[in-house]
Length: 241
Ligand code: AP5
Image (cartoon, rainbow, N blue to C red):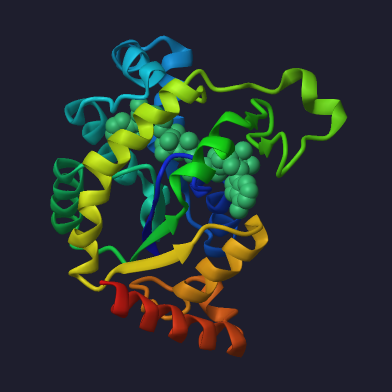
């Protein structure tokens, strides 16, 4: 399965990816995580990215494209991958297309997690991440256990001001690439409002209809009721696009 998770900041892409990659047995490739690692390591790429990220601006395409295209060329991506946070601009989408064409492979699905801006602000400002386990918590929706509270991180771009900037960038630069994937029949729209478990069920259902170019454990485990939900999701998708 080669797929993309797309959606506004704080929609739950990272939360859902943690479950989905286990189901599908594919690597989770988060451009945001890669950039944060580069910043923490003090690499040249990280130094370039740091200021853009703190402000909630997009890191320039020429920095991000090379980083992600190189990553999906690694051997662990041969059976598929889950991209999270990339592509975010039209040039990034086109660069991904070219790289996949060069490798004679294709995308199987693009899952759009939809959440309204008002809810996004609350999700982003309340997020806390565990640097040891990678777990993502929320002070209201997913409170952390007391023993990890002292080591949790509040991301520098999870302020009200940076969140507004990120939402602005999402609507201006990222949302316009959604029709690009809808036109190819790859887009699966999923309502991101509800518990993380409910959202996961919706995504799993939507993916049951995908004819992956590589076999996955999730498709082998398809349940009949999930297939029904997937049909409904597909009909809604066609109606929306
Ligand atoms: P990135 O790390 O990609 O950030 P993002 O897209 O803004 O996404 P987030 O990580 O903020 O949110 P998420 O959707 O993963 O939500 P999560 O699951 O954590 O990028 C950061 C920055 O790096 C960018 O601003 C940019 O500067 C740069 N960058 C990265 N990629 C780039 C690219 N391709 N091009 C250029 N620049 C790039 O959930 C959020 C919170 O909500 C958590 O607290 C969680 O517990 C909670 N939550 C999740 N699901 C639910 C639910 N169903 N109900 C209630 N709460 C929930």
